[in-house]
Each structure stands twice: as C-alpha cells, then as structure tokens.
Image 1: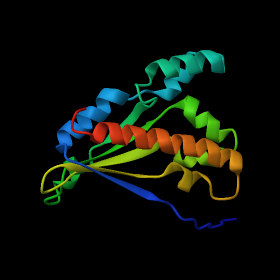
Image 2: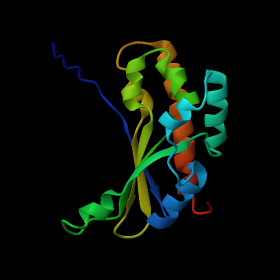
Image 3: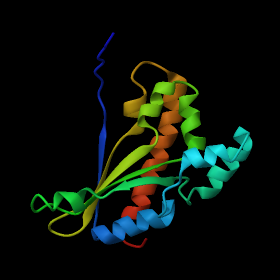
Length: 166
C-alpha cells in the first residue's frame, strides 16, 4: 500500500553581510569541520548514558555537531555560472531523541540541514526548513514542544554565525 500525505513546511531565510567563506567558516568553527560517524560511535558504547555523554562531548557550543557537507556550488559550476552553495547536515542525538521518542517518523527530518549560499552582490544567506513544521504533521503536543526547542536552537545558531563579529 502507498499513501500520500500533504503538509505545510516553513522555510527560514537569514541574510548575512558576511562573505560566504566566512559564514561557512563560522558554522564549522561551532559544529566542527569533521563529520561525526554516528554508526561507528554507536558500536563503541553499550548504554545510552555513555553514548549520550560521548555524543555531547562532540557537539559544539551551539549543541550541534557536523554529520555531512555537500558542496552544491562545486558540482553546479560544471554546468554553468552558479553561486557558491553548501548543504550542511547537523544535529545531536541527545536532541533527536527528545522528538523521536514521541514519533519515530520525526527521524525523516533529524538531523537537520542548512543551505549556505553566496549572494552575487556580496554577503550570503542561510536557509533551512523549520524542524517543527516538518516533524509535527498530526497533533502531538509533546512532539511539538520538543521540536520547538530544536527550532530555537537552530535559529540561535544561524543568528550567531550570521553576525559579522563571529
């Protein structure tokens, strides 16, 4: 059986006066520049407590860690003139479990993703889909509450890296 369910999502846009390279560097300074291999990490620990403690130690000041980077701008320039753009996958298992324990389907949107884009006239922008708008498709107050915590943490990170002084 196949089913289809439509829902609305919220796309967040943040403009920054920072050049793209500085914006990306600010993000990676916070979340780390080497992707964390959660599968390998999971094999090293027998309990949630020890796993969580290790995962938390890998998170940056914002509470997030890097899981992956896709340099869209790199391969797109082979086709033509495109701005620098990078998709960054980030998260934290300790944050994810607060949502997944209410609905494992929230795992479709955890970890979260940011898209950093160089603006042609200078500066850059960050875009992402607001996690609560993706995860909470049906009424679930506990899931919504947990997802809103993630919304705020992600927004705080983007505001932090977008400032010119970071």
